[in-house]
Image (tube, rainbow, N blue to C red; front, side, top):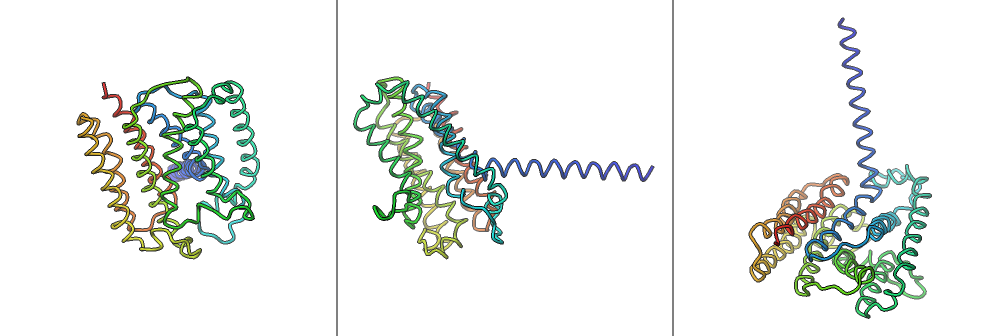
Length: 324
C-alpha cells in the first residue's frame, strides 16, 4: 500500500514537472519569439481607434501589423546559430531554435508580402491620392525602420539607430508612437477615405505614447547594461548607472507624464473614471521601475515590462468606454 501511494505521488510530481516544462516552453516561445510584441502593436493600435472614436482598420491590416512586427523584431536574432557558452536565456533559446527561425522568417516575409499586395491592389487608387502629409509619415516610419538595423549599405550612409546611445530610447519610442498612433490613421485614410479626429487630442495621445514607450525602452536598456557598456554604447544606464537612471531619468520622465496627463485631463474635463484608467499604467510603471534596483531575469523584462504596454492599451480601451 505504501509502495502504491509512493508511486502515485511520484507520478503526480512527474506530471507536474512535465506540465511546468511545457508551460515554460510555451511562455519562452511567445516572448522570446516576439509574438507578444506583435500582439502589443495590434493592442496599442486598437487603443488609438477606441480613444479617438474612429473606425477600426481592416482585419487584413492588423494581421499584417502583427506578422510584420514579429518578423522585424526577430531579425536582430535570426543570425544566432550557437550559444557560445552564453548564459543569456534568449541567446540560448535562439541557438536551440535556429532551424525554426531559419524557415519561419521567410514564411513571415512571404505572408507580409502577400497581404501588402492585397492591400495595394484593393486600395491602389486611394494610395495614389494619399495626402502628402500621410506619405511623409509613412516615409519617416519606413526610413527609421531601415536605419534602426543599419540596412542601408555603409558606403552610402553610416547610420545605425540601435547604436545612438542615449538617443536610442527616444528613437524607439518615436517609432512605436508613429506605428500605433499615426500609421493606423494613414491606413484608415486609405481604406475608408476622409474622416475626422480631434487634432489636439490626437497629438496628445501621440506624445503620451512616445513618452510611455520611451520610458519602456529605457527600462529595457537596464537589462543590456553589461553588453552596452562593453560595446561602449552610451545609453542612460551606461552613462549614469542603474540607480541614477531609475531615480534621475526614468521616474522624473514618468512624473512629467503624470503631471501632463493631469493638466490635459483638467483642460479637456475628463471624467474621474477616465482619468483613473489613464493614470493606472503610469502607476504600474513607477512600481516596476522601483523594483528594478535588483537585477531581474530576462523573462521578467519581457513579460512584466512589455506587459505594461498591454496594460496601457487595455486601460485606454476600457477608459474610452466612459466617454459617453
